[in-house]
Amino acid sequence: MKPSVLTRYRVMAYVTAVMLLVLCTCMVFKYGFDTGEDLTFVVSQAHGLLYILYLIVAFDLGQKARWPFGKLIGVLLSGTVPFVAFFVERRITREITPLLERPEVPGQTSGAGRAAESAPGTTSARG
Image (cartoon, rainbow, N blue to C red; front, top):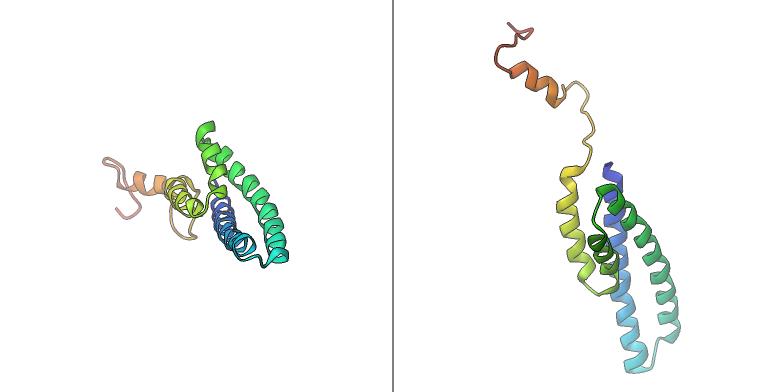
């Protein structure tokens, strides 16, 4: 899996989580203090669009990581509960990071090449 898949998920998880907190704050002002109705409308529309993008990106990550259906649904729904997306993003990042493809560093042999060089009974160019 490419690192960009995880990066897209992380960005959208944070953006969605922050927008949900902003929306909750706007709703407190709208319903608690009877002010900010227009701002609440704009923020709710923006959050809705961003949440749809989050669903697409999280679904893509889940398919590439081959998550079971229940886990996929849990990650998708984490963007609907304030603060939960931050914790889920952290857990998913720790889980997915070992699965990422690492780009080859120019001039460095791959792990298989190094294993063959150090294997007992093999000869190397160094003697």
